Length: 387
Ligand SMILES: Nc1ncnc2c1ncn2[C@@H]1O[C@H](COP(=O)(O)OP(=O)(O)O)[C@@H](O)[C@H]1O
Ligand SMILES: [Mg+2]
Image 1: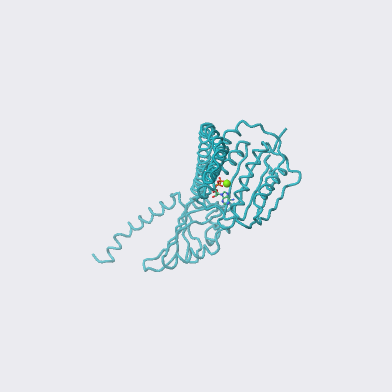
Image 2: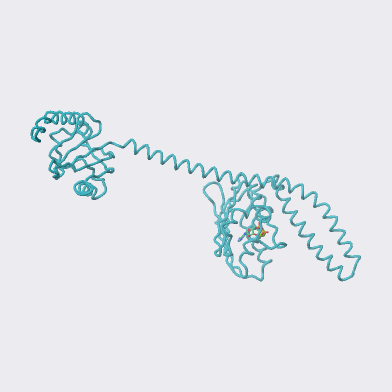
């Protein structure tokens, strides 16, 4: 059989084949377009006509621009046509389509170049699918993931706080016991030492008694701090005026550090409401923070103390020093009892934990931020007193 005869033989089937393909294009739910090389539409299947709301007469002959929203990225259509007509002879991506009514939706579009039997380019096809729902679901999923991450973070934070307050509560119980068990024998030792000091006048012994006295004082000091953990639980709260309290505490610390040149600025909002606390305890809480600030600053520095009313029935006190700062690895530990970076014998590591306990017991809060070499900021929140 010659080639010509073979072609003649299969022609009816070829036609039949084309018929099948046409029927398929007409019935698929994806939108199918065919256009010439100038992108003028020469075919749109029923799914496409229905989606865009045009009749065949309205659509065919127009360029593909008619169904592209002006909200697409600039140059997208040009890029699409170029990719389809030049290597790689196809394009795939997301586009924003627009219907005759002006409704926009996101579609996934796949284009390809069509060639005739001689391999010459004759047109382009485009198959498109509305992916609005998929996009919406994706966005929703992302949103859920974001919310989940946020909830997770809050949970971790709360867990941290819980561990911290549980730890402090346990220390409180322990401290009360210790203060009692150590406090009483220590008082006896102290009076015995004083007795001996009066009786044995040898100078070597006197030196030892003196240093024993210092150590005893140090221990009783610690016991005092430690027992403060439990005390403020039962304390009665009153209306406390912050301005004189802060000024007094600052004055005291200045007197103790008269060898230093620390510039102090206070900015207390006029008419600041009184807070609900117990004055001597609160003063102690501030003092521990001021003492640390002075210690961190060395010979010179600047201490800023500000107090202002917040919207949420709270007063905020900010204490900012220009001291050496707290390394990031320690920042979460500074409120823990017995955490200190000071040499043995210099710091007991109780100042901030006592301040924390006091402020918390008044329904307040305290947090710290610091930059090593620049300084530290303590922010204290205290509830406004309501009579
Ligand atoms: N203003 C501050 N600047 C730098 N470091 C600070 C400051 N306040 C607290 N710290 C750090 O927190 C630690 C704990 O403080 P604190 O509880 O008062 O105990 P102590 O002063 O006895 O060490 C300090 O040893 C210090 O390292
Ligand atoms: Mg301290």
